[in-house]
Figure 1 (cartoon, one colour):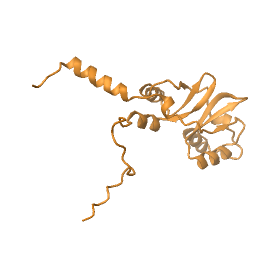
Figure 2 (cartoon, rainbow, N blue to C red):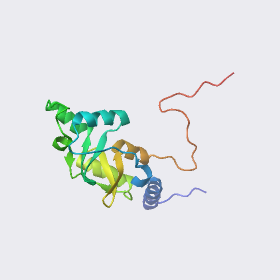
Figure 3 (cartoon, rainbow, N blue to C red):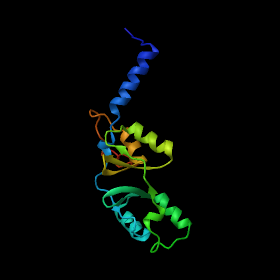
Length: 165
């Protein structure tokens, strides 16, 4: 026998299934983030960002979050033709950035970034910075596989190996 649900039941089941897959920032935040001082030069920070392969750094002054410096901020500095050995983080950072708590769900975090036009969001627990998440990481976290689905060991974009005869 075929059971046809009404539209409300289908919509409710779809939302429940989607929400069951959505995690929080605590699930994806990497505690290994870079912290810089406002008096550091852009050149020093760019070198550290390149070494760690990160797109944003937390700016702290006396242990307190005062800003975030991102790739976009660095690009703005380069467009202004500053000398990276002279220009300071303080001049180009985004001061008093919007932050999110670790319990913020991934959908909400993505919406915060999209609504405000940025790609990096500091994750905090009170006054403690836990890390920085990127929009790419948040969107990737939203597409996690269900626990019972096998994880592919192939690299993204690679083709399966041909079967032996």
